[in-house]
Image (tube, rainbow over all chains, first blue to last red; front, side, top):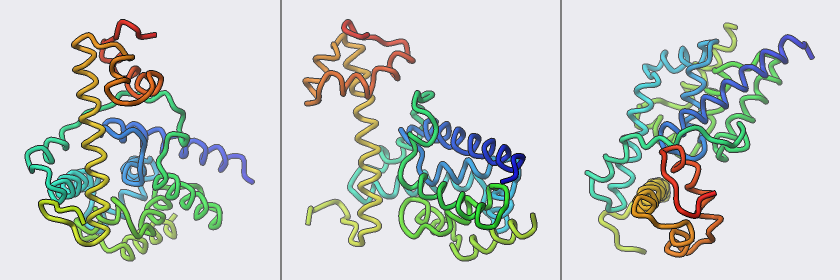
Length: 169
Length: 76
């Protein structure tokens, strides 16, 4: 194992998880889910996640908007007045958490994080945002695939775009 | 099946609704507890109203409220 690569990966993991947690808490969520890991991956300095999504016309802002819309629509479908459902989009930030990194992550975030790590290891690459996007594209159910659907993003095309970013590295 | 305003038939939509309702319930809980603390309730009273232990109520809410400069009489 290349010590430089290991250090780089540790730095990436730390940023990925710390930012995912911060983003989740800013959005009023106790623990990060796959959607927060995706937003965090877009912010990684390697830029590959943002480029892969950008090639399909999606950026962090559009994802955040689609997340809010998806959540409001889901509440309305359960009979919650639209006014209340839409008010949930106003942030109710929780403030910084005491729990350390992955221990506080939800199952969907863990699944994506572990899969991204596996992808990076099997290709002997440094962990990059595009690994996270590839793992995200593999999720069949849950908030993220629903939001990608709202954005008109085909998961296979997203996986292809992320792989193209990884090949280019 | 529960009669709802518009019952989401497919499980994907129904589960998304459940997630949304949990988030809504969590937020209502945070706001209600904050109001209770503002009105001078103790953790013991909040816990009793919520049907949980004092420790559980404290663990769930105390840090956030302290950050917002709120404390109960029995806070520690």
